[in-house]
Each structure stands twice: as C-alpha cells, then as structure tokens.
Length: 116
Image 1 (cartoon, helix red, strand yellow):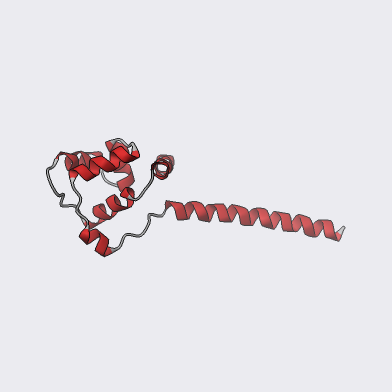
Image 2 (cartoon, rainbow, N blue to C red):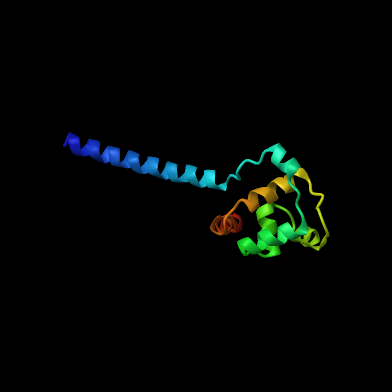
C-alpha cells in the first residue's frame, strides 16, 4: 500500500514538473534573441530590406509592425523612403531580430501577440 502511495506521489510531482518545464520553454521562445550593440551599429537597413523580410516571412505591414512593436504607419513610411533608413536603436534591433526569424516562428509570435 505504501508503495502505491509513493508511486502516485511521484507521478503527481512529475506532472507538475512537466507543466513547469513547458511554461519555461514557452517563455524562452517569447524572448527575442540577443542583438549586440555592434550588430545594431553596423547594420544598414533600407526600404528594400524591410520589403524583403516581409516577403520572406509572408507578412502584411500590420503583422510586421506587430512583430517589431511599432505602428503600421511607421512600416509604411519606411517602405516609401529611398536608401538607408535612420531608425532608432530599438527599432533597428527589432528589425535585426525579425530578420533572423523563420516563417513558422514569426507566425507563432504573431499568434501569441494576438492572444494577449
């Protein structure tokens, strides 16, 4: 009888640990990858790059803006400009992070943003 209770206790502890593990993995996925200051300073972001990233990920201006944390109008303005864009460091870092994403990852992040 004591053995049955011990096994049941272990099973419930394992279930709790598995739930906690899944939560931690989700949180780790939500965090954007680190972008170094040097990477931000060296990057040259142009309208064509923005259009290319959107096309690669299959995103609309609104969805792309959501991933970056900017307004859709900002993305529209960026795409309409010629040459290199003068962006804030935070926006540059966000563009670099999104540029490193794959299509599925971008879709998952958009779904999570819409759920919030």
